[in-house]
Image (cartoon, rainbow, N blue to C red; front, top):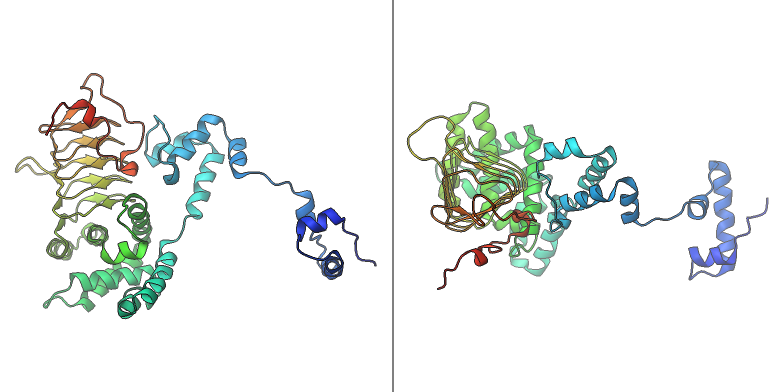
Length: 378
């Protein structure tokens, strides 16, 4: 059978730099192979129309839902929406097509571990004096779990608590609880996206004590939940000594957390921190006295807490709220509002507070609305 005749315009479209005669010979070989496989290699190219991804998204949902989907994505965090940031709520309001779209994006996110290995090789080439350090910390490790367990064990060890003992504790907790590694990756992405001082994933992993303190807490919290309280408290103490970050192992922390600088951070036993929260240094999430039981703050998703802030008592900071630096918060803060001062007051007043139109933990904007609200001048 003769080879199929290909239109010249199609030849140029598919192979613009190829000689048409060469294409005819190649198509003859392809046709022979497709005869055995019962497959037309040109069908996909000729018959399937191309569409822009943005158009596909708009075809699957109405315009309002499309705007909400792009708003929820980290790369489109500046879009405006009045809907809550809770993942549970999102599941109840999304259509199937929108939920599938978000799930697909989660699957296509860059894997921080693979990127870390690549960056580590580049850094080692640029600074040969660090090649041994990068090899021991990352390049020789088979998994992110082992790399994290090894790095934390070295950081938190001392003369009476060898790194080998800590490594066994950490790797056991990480390999038995894969949800921790999922949170670790989200934290890496959060630091890389929100902190302009972060050069790369490997830079965050090796050098950012806020990130490392948060991951050590995740392990300690698992041990605390298993009833291994003595060991959990020991890890808390070592993190406090090594990183100047004191998070009680009973505290519950979500994913996508940025602890920027982190020095002086104190989080109480019954505190709860939601997803995608950004907290700066010298922040206290504490109690108001000697009361037992549930006595510490509950921080909603998407909250930004400025440096030097004290949030005290079993109060709620609503989703997407912003707390100005050095504020003392003693009462609930409504969602998407700004509280600042000592004692903290809502910008715009309690009756008609100014509503934020962006997620503050993503934008890391510490000054919007505050400058206009205050007449204080240095």
